[in-house]
Image 1: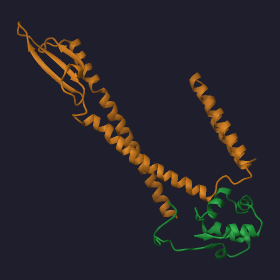
Image 2 (image 1 turned 120 degrees about the vertical axis):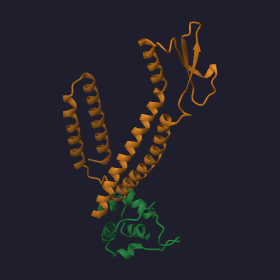
Image 3 (image 1 turned 30 degrees about the vertical axis):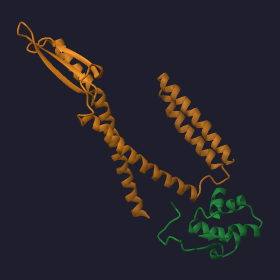
Image 4 (image 1 turned 45 degrees about the horizontal axis):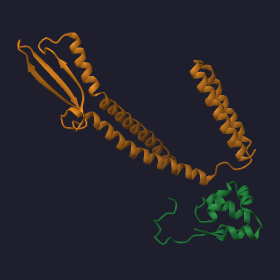
Length: 75
Length: 192
């Protein structure tokens, strides 16, 4: 899952701490999402998109894994 | 209140409650823990409510749940191996001390018996001898000799029995753990 959170934050002149506070998560979670290390829930995804005033598909983009759809990055 | 302040408060309260509980148990005063533990929980919960920052979120919850699951997996596997190894001390002949008995006939026709206990899996040599006892007349064993023999046998297998009991305890613990986890798993599996 790719995301444009860093770009959107820059556009809105927002720090990770501020975004974390607005969406109700820790700063570490925002860092992990930006680095594609953690895939947020749909609810959090919508909250982030709403914070930036855009649609969820403008923030997140799904990319098929090289190993196939059964592979997971959650482990 | 900031998150770090909350964590510091939690740590301080935990240390105080532990110290008070330890001191009161040692002094035989059982009323202090009954008051101190709930009071400590109330203080921590009150501090938690005043934290402005986010303490826990979905990523942390996921991390915790995964960590708990992995811990369970590791404990179950390691515990099962340990239980089998320890229990084998109780039932295995090769891991048990070797007991040998030799009967000697005296000039007066009385028969005595020398019982030796050797280290497990070792040849019957003097350096592998753990302990020995002699029954002077096996046809007329007196009360003290019988007690001595019983004590000898009990002590000989005591270490193995201890390990066996530890193995059984771990085994029962793992079964309880799995049963509890299974019950919760079925509950949440139906719920979500």
